[in-house]
Length: 379
Ligand code: ATP
Ligand code: MG
Image 1 (tube, rainbow, N blue to C red):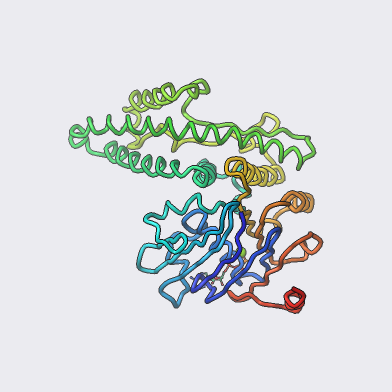
Image 2: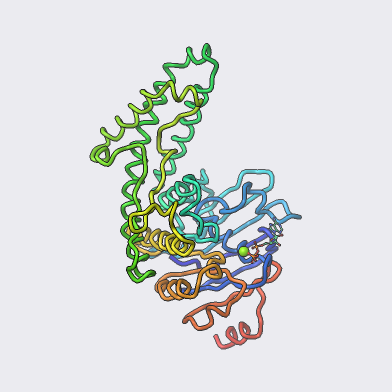
Protein backbone atom coordinates (compact mmCIF):
# COMPACT_ATOMS: atom_id res chain seq x y z
CA UNK A 1 0.00 0.00 0.00
CA UNK A 2 1.08 3.53 -0.60
CA UNK A 3 -0.18 6.94 0.43
CA UNK A 4 0.06 9.15 -2.64
CA UNK A 5 -1.21 12.40 -1.27
CA UNK A 6 -2.71 13.83 1.88
CA UNK A 7 -4.55 17.13 2.12
CA UNK A 8 -5.36 18.96 5.32
CA UNK A 9 -7.64 21.83 6.12
CA UNK A 10 -7.95 23.24 9.64
CA UNK A 11 -6.48 20.05 11.08
CA UNK A 12 -4.54 20.65 14.34
CA UNK A 13 -2.01 23.41 13.54
CA UNK A 14 -2.20 22.80 9.78
CA UNK A 15 -4.27 25.48 8.16
CA UNK A 16 -4.21 24.23 4.59
CA UNK A 17 -1.61 21.94 3.10
CA UNK A 18 -1.13 19.23 0.48
CA UNK A 19 1.66 16.72 0.97
CA UNK A 20 2.67 14.25 -1.70
CA UNK A 21 4.47 11.13 -0.60
CA UNK A 22 6.73 8.72 -2.43
CA UNK A 23 7.63 5.04 -2.28
CA UNK A 24 10.35 4.12 0.19
CA UNK A 25 11.21 6.26 3.17
CA UNK A 26 9.50 9.62 3.59
CA UNK A 27 11.11 11.67 6.33
CA UNK A 28 8.92 14.38 7.81
CA UNK A 29 11.36 16.56 9.68
CA UNK A 30 11.41 19.83 11.54
CA UNK A 31 11.76 21.31 14.99
CA UNK A 32 9.59 20.40 17.97
CA UNK A 33 5.89 21.36 17.98
CA UNK A 34 5.76 22.18 14.26
CA UNK A 35 3.15 19.63 13.19
CA UNK A 36 5.12 16.50 12.18
CA UNK A 37 3.12 14.11 14.34
CA UNK A 38 -0.05 15.90 13.26
CA UNK A 39 0.64 14.72 9.70
CA UNK A 40 1.00 11.09 10.85
CA UNK A 41 -2.08 11.46 13.01
CA UNK A 42 -4.04 12.54 9.93
CA UNK A 43 -2.86 9.54 7.93
CA UNK A 44 -3.49 7.10 10.74
CA UNK A 45 -7.00 8.47 11.17
CA UNK A 46 -7.97 6.42 8.12
CA UNK A 47 -6.44 3.23 9.48
CA UNK A 48 -8.17 3.31 12.85
CA UNK A 49 -11.12 5.58 12.31
CA UNK A 50 -9.84 7.79 15.10
CA UNK A 51 -6.78 9.58 16.34
CA UNK A 52 -4.07 7.65 18.09
CA UNK A 53 -3.61 10.38 20.66
CA UNK A 54 -6.67 12.61 21.00
CA UNK A 55 -9.36 11.81 23.58
CA UNK A 56 -11.98 13.66 21.62
CA UNK A 57 -12.30 14.23 17.90
CA UNK A 58 -12.78 17.96 18.40
CA UNK A 59 -9.17 18.26 19.58
CA UNK A 60 -8.22 17.63 15.96
CA UNK A 61 -9.93 20.76 14.72
CA UNK A 62 -7.77 23.84 14.50
CA UNK A 63 -8.28 26.08 17.54
CA UNK A 64 -9.97 28.91 15.65
CA UNK A 65 -11.98 26.79 13.19
CA UNK A 66 -15.15 24.72 13.50
CA UNK A 67 -14.46 21.87 11.07
CA UNK A 68 -11.35 20.02 9.92
CA UNK A 69 -11.06 18.17 6.62
CA UNK A 70 -8.54 15.50 5.70
CA UNK A 71 -8.41 13.86 2.29
CA UNK A 72 -6.08 11.02 1.45
CA UNK A 73 -5.38 9.43 -1.85
CA UNK A 74 -3.81 5.98 -1.49
CA UNK A 75 -3.22 2.97 -3.72
CA UNK A 76 -3.49 -0.69 -2.97
CA UNK A 77 -2.44 -3.38 -5.42
CA UNK A 78 -5.72 -3.13 -7.30
CA UNK A 79 -6.70 0.50 -7.35
CA UNK A 80 -6.49 4.03 -6.08
CA UNK A 81 -8.91 5.12 -3.41
CA UNK A 82 -9.80 8.55 -2.13
CA UNK A 83 -10.71 8.68 1.54
CA UNK A 84 -12.09 11.72 3.29
CA UNK A 85 -12.79 12.76 6.87
CA UNK A 86 -14.84 15.67 8.09
CA UNK A 87 -14.35 16.42 11.77
CA UNK A 88 -16.55 19.00 13.34
CA UNK A 89 -16.30 20.45 16.84
CA UNK A 90 -20.02 19.87 17.41
CA UNK A 91 -21.14 16.97 15.17
CA UNK A 92 -19.99 13.34 14.91
CA UNK A 93 -17.20 12.89 12.39
CA UNK A 94 -17.94 11.63 8.92
CA UNK A 95 -15.89 9.43 6.64
CA UNK A 96 -16.07 9.22 2.87
CA UNK A 97 -14.82 6.60 0.43
CA UNK A 98 -14.48 7.85 -3.13
CA UNK A 99 -16.71 10.75 -2.08
CA UNK A 100 -19.52 8.49 -0.84
CA UNK A 101 -20.36 8.93 2.82
CA UNK A 102 -19.94 5.82 4.97
CA UNK A 103 -22.74 4.90 7.34
CA UNK A 104 -20.51 4.02 10.25
CA UNK A 105 -17.00 4.96 11.33
CA UNK A 106 -16.13 1.29 11.67
CA UNK A 107 -16.64 0.85 7.91
CA UNK A 108 -13.41 2.72 7.25
CA UNK A 109 -11.29 0.23 9.21
CA UNK A 110 -9.50 -2.32 7.08
CA UNK A 111 -9.66 -0.19 3.95
CA UNK A 112 -6.29 1.48 4.46
CA UNK A 113 -3.88 -0.55 6.57
CA UNK A 114 -1.04 1.00 8.55
CA UNK A 115 1.33 -0.07 11.28
CA UNK A 116 2.01 2.75 13.70
CA UNK A 117 5.05 2.80 15.92
CA UNK A 118 5.35 5.65 18.38
CA UNK A 119 7.51 6.17 21.49
CA UNK A 120 4.75 4.99 23.86
CA UNK A 121 4.84 1.58 22.14
CA UNK A 122 8.36 1.07 23.42
CA UNK A 123 6.80 0.39 26.82
CA UNK A 124 4.39 -2.27 25.60
CA UNK A 125 6.30 -5.12 27.27
CA UNK A 126 5.96 -3.72 30.79
CA UNK A 127 2.76 -1.73 30.43
CA UNK A 128 -0.56 -2.92 31.87
CA UNK A 129 -2.29 -5.87 30.12
CA UNK A 130 -4.86 -3.46 28.62
CA UNK A 131 -2.09 -1.94 26.47
CA UNK A 132 -1.17 -5.33 25.03
CA UNK A 133 -4.84 -6.15 24.44
CA UNK A 134 -5.16 -2.86 22.57
CA UNK A 135 -2.19 -3.81 20.40
CA UNK A 136 -3.97 -7.05 19.48
CA UNK A 137 -7.32 -5.38 18.89
CA UNK A 138 -5.93 -2.65 16.66
CA UNK A 139 -3.85 -5.09 14.62
CA UNK A 140 -6.60 -7.67 14.20
CA UNK A 141 -9.34 -5.13 13.43
CA UNK A 142 -7.51 -3.96 10.33
CA UNK A 143 -7.46 -7.52 9.02
CA UNK A 144 -10.89 -8.75 10.09
CA UNK A 145 -13.74 -6.23 10.20
CA UNK A 146 -15.98 -8.82 11.87
CA UNK A 147 -13.70 -8.66 14.90
CA UNK A 148 -14.73 -5.04 15.49
CA UNK A 149 -18.39 -6.06 15.59
CA UNK A 150 -17.63 -8.84 18.04
CA UNK A 151 -15.66 -6.53 20.32
CA UNK A 152 -18.31 -3.82 20.25
CA UNK A 153 -21.02 -6.30 21.18
CA UNK A 154 -18.79 -7.89 23.83
CA UNK A 155 -18.22 -4.55 25.55
CA UNK A 156 -21.94 -3.77 25.49
CA UNK A 157 -22.93 -7.10 27.03
CA UNK A 158 -20.12 -6.88 29.57
CA UNK A 159 -21.34 -3.49 30.67
CA UNK A 160 -24.93 -4.73 31.03
CA UNK A 161 -23.83 -7.78 33.00
CA UNK A 162 -21.66 -5.65 35.29
CA UNK A 163 -24.61 -3.32 35.88
CA UNK A 164 -26.64 -6.28 37.18
CA UNK A 165 -23.75 -7.41 39.40
CA UNK A 166 -23.73 -3.95 40.95
CA UNK A 167 -27.48 -3.84 41.69
CA UNK A 168 -28.97 -4.00 45.18
CA UNK A 169 -30.02 -7.61 46.01
CA UNK A 170 -33.80 -7.04 45.62
CA UNK A 171 -33.41 -5.39 42.26
CA UNK A 172 -30.95 -8.04 41.10
CA UNK A 173 -33.43 -10.77 42.01
CA UNK A 174 -35.63 -9.58 39.13
CA UNK A 175 -32.75 -9.69 36.69
CA UNK A 176 -31.33 -13.15 37.25
CA UNK A 177 -32.75 -14.53 34.05
CA UNK A 178 -31.27 -11.66 32.08
CA UNK A 179 -27.94 -12.29 33.78
CA UNK A 180 -27.97 -15.88 32.48
CA UNK A 181 -28.75 -14.66 28.97
CA UNK A 182 -25.78 -12.27 29.17
CA UNK A 183 -23.49 -15.00 30.49
CA UNK A 184 -24.45 -17.20 27.56
CA UNK A 185 -23.81 -14.46 25.02
CA UNK A 186 -20.53 -13.43 26.65
CA UNK A 187 -19.28 -17.03 26.63
CA UNK A 188 -20.17 -17.34 22.99
CA UNK A 189 -18.36 -14.11 22.08
CA UNK A 190 -15.39 -15.10 24.25
CA UNK A 191 -15.06 -18.31 22.24
CA UNK A 192 -15.05 -16.43 18.92
CA UNK A 193 -12.70 -13.66 20.04
CA UNK A 194 -10.29 -15.93 21.92
CA UNK A 195 -10.03 -18.16 18.87
CA UNK A 196 -9.10 -15.23 16.62
CA UNK A 197 -6.63 -13.83 19.17
CA UNK A 198 -5.05 -17.24 19.65
CA UNK A 199 -4.51 -17.64 15.93
CA UNK A 200 -3.03 -14.13 15.66
CA UNK A 201 -0.69 -14.63 18.61
CA UNK A 202 0.75 -17.79 17.06
CA UNK A 203 1.66 -15.83 13.95
CA UNK A 204 3.02 -13.02 16.08
CA UNK A 205 5.22 -15.46 17.96
CA UNK A 206 6.53 -16.89 14.69
CA UNK A 207 7.53 -13.51 13.24
CA UNK A 208 8.79 -11.95 16.47
CA UNK A 209 11.21 -14.88 16.83
CA UNK A 210 12.57 -14.19 13.36
CA UNK A 211 13.01 -10.43 13.82
CA UNK A 212 14.34 -10.63 17.36
CA UNK A 213 16.77 -13.32 16.30
CA UNK A 214 18.13 -11.06 13.56
CA UNK A 215 18.37 -8.07 15.89
CA UNK A 216 20.25 -9.91 18.62
CA UNK A 217 22.19 -12.31 16.38
CA UNK A 218 20.34 -15.27 17.82
CA UNK A 219 21.65 -14.88 21.34
CA UNK A 220 18.22 -14.75 22.90
CA UNK A 221 15.02 -16.62 22.21
CA UNK A 222 11.70 -14.83 22.66
CA UNK A 223 8.38 -16.57 23.01
CA UNK A 224 4.93 -15.01 22.92
CA UNK A 225 1.93 -16.96 24.14
CA UNK A 226 -1.70 -16.21 24.80
CA UNK A 227 -2.67 -15.79 28.43
CA UNK A 228 -6.41 -16.32 28.75
CA UNK A 229 -8.95 -18.03 31.00
CA UNK A 230 -9.01 -21.00 28.63
CA UNK A 231 -6.63 -23.96 28.63
CA UNK A 232 -4.62 -24.96 25.62
CA UNK A 233 -6.81 -27.94 24.75
CA UNK A 234 -9.98 -25.81 24.92
CA UNK A 235 -8.84 -24.32 21.61
CA UNK A 236 -9.46 -27.66 19.91
CA UNK A 237 -13.12 -26.79 19.36
CA UNK A 238 -15.43 -23.84 19.68
CA UNK A 239 -17.73 -25.90 21.88
CA UNK A 240 -14.98 -26.62 24.41
CA UNK A 241 -13.91 -23.00 24.38
CA UNK A 242 -17.42 -21.67 24.91
CA UNK A 243 -18.11 -24.18 27.68
CA UNK A 244 -14.96 -23.16 29.48
CA UNK A 245 -16.05 -19.51 29.61
CA UNK A 246 -19.65 -20.39 30.42
CA UNK A 247 -18.70 -22.55 33.36
CA UNK A 248 -16.39 -19.84 34.72
CA UNK A 249 -19.20 -17.30 34.50
CA UNK A 250 -21.73 -19.66 36.06
CA UNK A 251 -19.58 -21.04 38.86
CA UNK A 252 -18.12 -17.84 40.23
CA UNK A 253 -21.18 -15.72 40.79
CA UNK A 254 -20.56 -15.20 44.51
CA UNK A 255 -17.12 -13.83 43.88
CA UNK A 256 -18.36 -11.67 41.06
CA UNK A 257 -21.10 -10.27 43.30
CA UNK A 258 -18.52 -9.33 45.92
CA UNK A 259 -16.49 -7.47 43.31
CA UNK A 260 -19.51 -6.13 41.44
CA UNK A 261 -17.84 -7.00 38.14
CA UNK A 262 -17.39 -9.81 35.62
CA UNK A 263 -14.10 -11.49 36.52
CA UNK A 264 -13.71 -13.86 33.59
CA UNK A 265 -13.63 -13.30 29.87
CA UNK A 266 -11.46 -11.95 27.10
CA UNK A 267 -11.30 -8.53 28.82
CA UNK A 268 -8.81 -10.19 31.18
CA UNK A 269 -6.51 -11.52 28.44
CA UNK A 270 -2.82 -10.78 28.20
CA UNK A 271 0.19 -11.65 26.10
CA UNK A 272 2.86 -13.61 27.89
CA UNK A 273 6.20 -12.51 26.53
CA UNK A 274 9.29 -14.45 27.51
CA UNK A 275 12.98 -14.21 26.70
CA UNK A 276 15.03 -17.34 27.26
CA UNK A 277 12.16 -18.76 29.30
CA UNK A 278 11.87 -15.78 31.66
CA UNK A 279 8.90 -13.45 31.86
CA UNK A 280 10.02 -10.31 30.09
CA UNK A 281 7.34 -8.27 31.88
CA UNK A 282 9.44 -8.80 35.00
CA UNK A 283 13.00 -9.39 33.86
CA UNK A 284 13.73 -7.80 30.49
CA UNK A 285 16.27 -5.00 30.18
CA UNK A 286 15.50 -1.68 28.48
CA UNK A 287 17.32 -2.83 25.37
CA UNK A 288 15.46 -6.14 25.24
CA UNK A 289 12.15 -4.31 25.62
CA UNK A 290 13.00 -2.00 22.76
CA UNK A 291 14.02 -4.87 20.51
CA UNK A 292 10.91 -6.83 21.43
CA UNK A 293 8.53 -3.96 20.82
CA UNK A 294 10.21 -3.22 17.52
CA UNK A 295 10.01 -6.90 16.55
CA UNK A 296 6.30 -6.92 17.44
CA UNK A 297 5.63 -3.98 15.14
CA UNK A 298 7.63 -5.52 12.31
CA UNK A 299 5.71 -8.77 12.90
CA UNK A 300 2.42 -6.88 12.74
CA UNK A 301 3.44 -5.70 9.28
CA UNK A 302 4.36 -9.21 8.11
CA UNK A 303 1.08 -10.74 9.29
CA UNK A 304 -0.81 -7.98 7.51
CA UNK A 305 1.17 -8.64 4.32
CA UNK A 306 0.64 -12.41 4.60
CA UNK A 307 -3.11 -12.06 4.96
CA UNK A 308 -3.73 -9.24 2.49
CA UNK A 309 -1.05 -9.82 -0.11
CA UNK A 310 0.75 -6.52 0.30
CA UNK A 311 2.51 -4.53 2.98
CA UNK A 312 0.63 -1.95 5.01
CA UNK A 313 2.14 1.54 5.25
CA UNK A 314 4.55 1.95 8.18
CA UNK A 315 4.26 5.11 10.27
CA UNK A 316 7.14 5.72 12.67
CA UNK A 317 6.61 8.65 14.98
CA UNK A 318 9.93 9.83 16.30
CA UNK A 319 10.99 6.34 17.34
CA UNK A 320 14.32 6.26 15.59
CA UNK A 321 15.71 8.91 17.90
CA UNK A 322 14.81 6.61 20.79
CA UNK A 323 16.76 3.67 19.41
CA UNK A 324 20.47 2.98 19.47
CA UNK A 325 22.57 2.85 16.30
CA UNK A 326 22.37 -0.89 15.74
CA UNK A 327 18.57 -0.94 15.96
CA UNK A 328 18.36 2.16 13.77
CA UNK A 329 20.49 0.45 11.16
CA UNK A 330 18.42 -2.70 11.50
CA UNK A 331 15.20 -0.80 10.78
CA UNK A 332 16.62 1.18 7.91
CA UNK A 333 17.99 -1.90 6.19
CA UNK A 334 14.84 -3.95 6.77
CA UNK A 335 12.11 -1.69 5.49
CA UNK A 336 12.81 -2.01 1.79
CA UNK A 337 9.91 -2.68 -0.52
CA UNK A 338 7.38 -0.80 1.52
CA UNK A 339 6.33 2.75 2.15
CA UNK A 340 7.51 4.18 5.44
CA UNK A 341 6.61 7.61 6.78
CA UNK A 342 8.89 8.71 9.58
CA UNK A 343 8.92 11.85 11.69
CA UNK A 344 12.19 13.14 13.10
CA UNK A 345 13.72 16.33 14.39
CA UNK A 346 17.06 15.48 12.88
CA UNK A 347 17.14 14.28 9.30
CA UNK A 348 20.86 13.52 9.25
CA UNK A 349 20.25 9.90 10.29
CA UNK A 350 18.59 9.30 6.94
CA UNK A 351 20.94 11.14 4.68
CA UNK A 352 22.89 8.02 3.84
CA UNK A 353 19.81 5.90 3.20
CA UNK A 354 18.80 5.37 -0.38
CA UNK A 355 15.59 6.70 -1.86
CA UNK A 356 14.50 9.01 0.94
CA UNK A 357 12.05 11.82 0.39
CA UNK A 358 12.49 14.75 2.78
CA UNK A 359 9.55 16.86 3.85
CA UNK A 360 10.23 19.86 6.05
CA UNK A 361 7.37 20.98 8.29
CA UNK A 362 7.37 24.34 10.04
CA UNK A 363 4.45 25.89 11.86
CA UNK A 364 1.99 23.51 10.21
CA UNK A 365 3.30 24.22 6.71
CA UNK A 366 5.52 22.42 4.29
CA UNK A 367 8.63 24.48 3.74
CA UNK A 368 10.69 24.19 0.63
CA UNK A 369 14.32 24.79 1.52
CA UNK A 370 17.19 25.16 -0.90
CA UNK A 371 17.80 21.45 -1.40
CA UNK A 372 14.10 20.62 -1.87
CA UNK A 373 13.78 23.39 -4.44
CA UNK A 374 16.81 22.03 -6.30
CA UNK A 375 15.30 18.55 -6.27
CA UNK A 376 11.93 19.78 -7.51
CA UNK A 377 13.67 21.73 -10.28
CA UNK A 378 15.60 18.61 -11.34
CA UNK A 379 12.35 16.68 -11.65
P1 ATP B 1 7.68 17.03 18.38
O1 ATP B 1 8.94 17.00 17.59
O2 ATP B 1 7.84 17.74 19.67
O3 ATP B 1 7.01 15.72 18.52
P2 ATP B 1 5.75 17.74 16.32
O4 ATP B 1 6.29 18.49 15.17
O5 ATP B 1 5.48 16.30 16.15
O6 ATP B 1 6.68 18.01 17.57
P3 ATP B 1 2.93 18.03 16.66
O7 ATP B 1 2.58 17.23 17.85
O8 ATP B 1 2.66 17.49 15.33
O9 ATP B 1 4.45 18.49 16.81
O10 ATP B 1 2.22 19.44 16.71
C1 ATP B 1 2.14 20.14 17.86
C2 ATP B 1 1.66 21.54 17.58
O11 ATP B 1 0.32 21.51 17.12
C3 ATP B 1 1.71 22.30 18.87
O12 ATP B 1 2.27 23.56 18.62
C4 ATP B 1 0.26 22.42 19.26
O13 ATP B 1 -0.01 23.59 19.99
C5 ATP B 1 -0.43 22.42 17.91
N1 ATP B 1 -1.81 21.98 17.99
C6 ATP B 1 -2.29 20.83 18.50
N2 ATP B 1 -3.63 20.75 18.38
C7 ATP B 1 -4.01 21.89 17.78
C8 ATP B 1 -5.27 22.43 17.39
N3 ATP B 1 -6.41 21.75 17.58
N4 ATP B 1 -5.27 23.64 16.77
C9 ATP B 1 -4.12 24.32 16.56
N5 ATP B 1 -2.92 23.87 16.91
C10 ATP B 1 -2.84 22.69 17.52
MG1 MG C 1 5.90 14.66 17.32
